[in-house]
Length: 526
Ligand SMILES: Nc1nc2c(ncn2[C@@H]2O[C@H](COP(=O)(O)OP(=O)(O)OP(=O)(O)O)[C@@H](O)[C@H]2O)c(=O)[nH]1
Image (cartoon, rainbow, N blue to C red; front, top):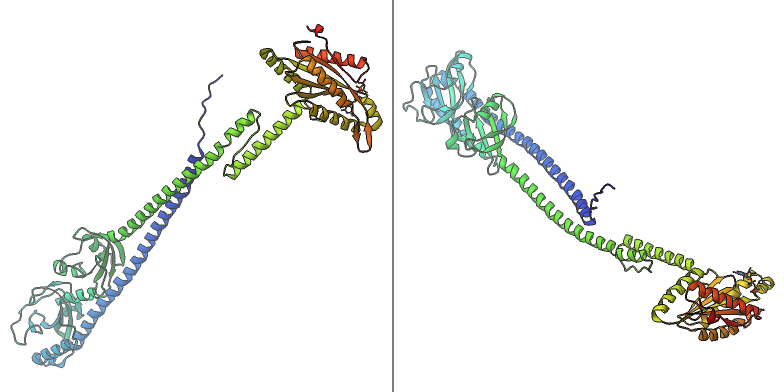
């Protein structure tokens, strides 16, 4: 026969643990996916909000520049310029600056085409001034007569980074001078600070070449410096952009950039990536921790419940074995409905088995032992008698005149009479004796530890008891009994022989006139 490897089936506990894992892990993964999705959404929303802020800041800068430019354009029409009255024009320019109270970081200068400064509000009128000033875009004012906003450069008077808005001054239809306003970058730093960005966030303004004009932090260190290549690359794209960049200090920033078509300047706002990811990481860590706690708790509960279920099921093992042995099954409460139901089924199966066993060994009408059981018990008891040197007697009982009762009162009354006979036999015999119905109106009794004489004495009494009138309602029946008695070891040594001799003696009783007991003679012993 081929060898068969039996694989051990998984336990309830392992199945429950698997169930818990199958429930908790997908839920946790789903939560991770949702949190990550939410994180991406928030990041996207924040990017859009930031872009809006950058756009608003950029137009604030544009408005500021435009306002300065328009003040200059108005001043450039001053009649004092045409009259070469620079002294009065100087005072007028100062008044314009004074009217713009917040503009102490602006100065006004008047230059001719050679770059000679005729006045500069940063110096008293008449004080020496650079004879050949130059700023980027100076020439174009004379060439195309249009205002210019320069990039950041080092001013000749202040020797610090500065930028200039220059407008043409027309005299007799020709550009005779350029009137310009020098603006310190600090003006834009203030504009950035007004936004009150959260700590760690950085905003910066860049001119058209990507030079840092203002920055929310470390202004002194960075002003006039070129932006990082990533920023410059995105500035040149001339668009609104959301991208990742790294600062000079090596901090990776989530950056938004807004570019102005008017000034050609740009504003960038950056949030450290760390600020973004830290929140996500913390949330994910909390989720993982919560999942682990939940998993551990659920596994512990599953382990406990699995143990209880297993104990309930194992509680059925004993009753199942009892059932197998044909014993009456007792099932204790198992505290699990299904196990209790199986236990109940085992009890019912045991009851059915017991009933079947009883039916196999007993007479259906009287409930007495049948011939099979009688033979079995006689054989068992004979073995004991042989070992213990004790005696045993068999009484073979046949009713006299029973057929007449059947015939006179019917079969049912005959049955009732047979039951009454059985009851009288049971009532007369000892607990240790076995009463059997061998068939029809024939009965037998095996009397353990009883010799031939005692058995014969008992048989005679039994004849009288069985011959007493039988009353069923208003019916009364008269029968009697003939009994043959045989004993071990006096008459026979085997069950068959004992029954045979008792039967023969019973026939002798019949032959002798019925209603009597006859002993099998010891002489007939085999
Ligand atoms: N009511 C009933 N009658 C049965 C049953 N089994 C057998 N009999 C009848 O019992 C009778 C037994 O026959 P006999 O032993 O000849 O009847 P008897 O009148 O006692 O005859 P003797 O033994 O010679 O006295 C038969 O008529 C059977 O049909 C039973 O279970 N119920």
